[in-house]
Length: 604
Ligand code: ASP
Image (cartoon, rainbow, N blue to C red):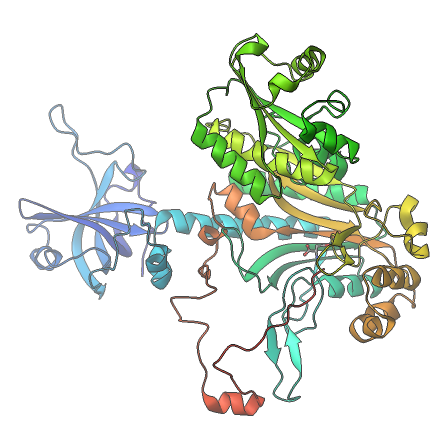
């Protein structure tokens, strides 16, 4: 159908007869001569229809409209360039030549499109409804091709490292990753349901018991969650598991993988090794388990200095075993009242009673604007000044509470404050980080029980193993779990796993899973661990998020071919949709149109 693609012809092709096929990107009529920019996924080539070359093609060219698919046969000619006229275009790779058309075939006529392809469109629903048109835009084509580059590189790299790609079932059984399952009814066993995998977690561990040693999969995962900008009901993970490994082995492997991906898909060289901090340190200094370290605003602990402060919010928190922490937003003393309100609301939404602050307008404490600074002693003020390095023009923001909630609140304030100050404007840095030693358990106040921070198959640190076995539970137990973070976004996470039935049983018990439920739900894995299970561990990277960051996009929808909208609908194919009553009958399913009382599934 073609001899060349639309970004191939150069001056060296002048004189050749060529055939091109593609979409009409633009049509211009210049005094009866029609100029068409013909586009395919590679680029654009200008085609000229001159009556003297081919009257027939020239006549037909007058009917061309944007997005028609046409085939053009013609001769490559140099574009006119003299002392007075220059029709070449240096911005275009094919800008030195044009194809003088001899023949034009209308392959497929296009009606007027519902939106213009060369303009950004804010109506995302419209884009989704005509996604196949949206994908024609160079930006989307580029994103999907980058995604391919990422998966190809992943496969190449992991293959070189001896990893073997194995597909695991989509019709599977519930595996707890902390979200709700999508269920698929079984026709052959009415009343029974498959769960779509939230992750291939148990299968990959069972492959280790199966002796595969090094597994990976570009795996589809399904989680029935409320959708946010970076969430989709179905998404893709680069899922990895290996036997006879320790945390260090997984970290090295993944650093190598990410390095290769960034090189191949973005042409970026990144450090061979990423910094590492423990979860405790990440929370303590940045108030986040996925800290963005491209800017400062690090926390300073003032518990000792303010433990006797007359301002009860501070001294009271310390007396109750909590902490006082603060950040110095350099040069932000002129923050507006509206901005202070916004930060306060953010702190309140995160559980704080309010937000204590000091606007240090001048050097002298008298010039400091703050609801409580008057109630501080000179010694306290001096301690603040030196520990926070306060200078005229700075804004100090505080959190006082138990350690974890205080860190969490100040962490959110820190991010918003950086945003208000535009601290990341023009920042091109790629800041990678490992966060290690996550807690094994968290306490869920609502259900009054412990839940797994990562998932129930995660191994405690050696030092904490005994405690788990003995049932000495607390949120201080640490896990051999690690996350890899880029610029404040979690790229992925994993852990070294439990591979012994007694330790796994102890973990289930810690999570309040009865022996019967454990046998029913996880009998296969407990059994498997009784027949010679190798020590193993792994990790999963969120492919969509990784590609999103590589493509500098704000949403994973921009790097998925056919994503769902925030109501979980595919507007193009109109799914989910009602089904034929006969299909329901086959499945012995009755649909109740009225909402019924909902029991929330336990998380964790
Ligand atoms: N299954 C985990 C997840 O989806 C990853 C892992 O532990 O390997 O987050």
